[in-house]
Length: 441
Image 1 (cartoon, rainbow, N blue to C red):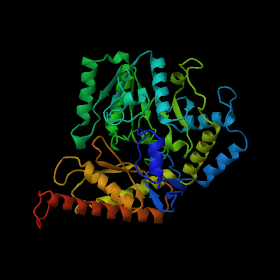
Image 2: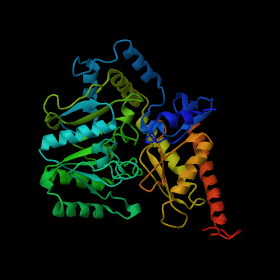
Image 3: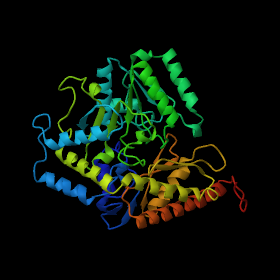
Image 4: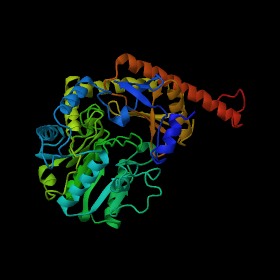
């Protein structure tokens, strides 16, 4: 009998990776049911897209109402008021005490591409500085900026020119803030004149790279360096945005504002829309027609985004993210004595991660990490891994997840980690590295 996986393999490029073989039939808030009626708790949220939950009634109603009016005109041909109103809202909400303007696009990668175009045009410079471990998309500029080769860059040929990468400050992996700043100083002295750098782009919390937050002191240093050298600071808030980190935007944790902010994912609550908001004079630099796109700011996505912003405010989802994130981190911390593979638990709000090494070593363990993910999935909890070494589990449940479902998920998570621990010990014994009956460190 032909299965859905057989059909998928026959019809879809293998370049489109899949974390699970769950084929969704319906979803509600933090739960998904597959075609066979199996229920799953969703701790991925479409990779931080449905922060307001699957099919939030207010978002669904807003899209239905827009469907009854029109679905597409192309704002550049026949504009519409709710596009303008959403731009006005983001201009008020995005951090920065200065006049702002906004454009809309469709995907996070497209937002990043536009941010780079705007920065280059506004400054008359071409060089861009990014960081190791970063993820900025799969387009050519996006993957050039991305600081991870596999699977994003390998085999795709030469990257875009004049993009420079710096080590991301990560004390856990031996890179201090001083190390990262010294590398930036060396870059400017040895490789690229800062007077030729248009912008530094940074995720306030690295997403695919491992959920490592930027230290506030380092972000403030970047702001000062950009001011000193006439460079722009671009905050990629595609994954961190819209209450995920306990603030509407993650840059609010740092006390400084970016010149340009990119957004997508959580903005549309499941509908495709992205945005770039920045200093008005910077955003106005490109010539008319230089920015935009046929589907940019699609009316359905704009309607959903308005509803998402309403829900975040009305349900105080930033505060809820902070509260749920603390509960998750406390549960993980309670396992540390029994699970020596746990080397770090981190993340603001409900953008959390747990990192695993081989027990008693500083060697990353993607094997143990994937075992935890598989054990959780076998118990109907969907988790995602990330990190340059593949040894991090990231937690991105909808911020609206009901308390009872959240507690159920935490119980499953604990069981999965403990089961992975037992399985790992058995493997060690089978390999002969641990004598039967001997306790592992």
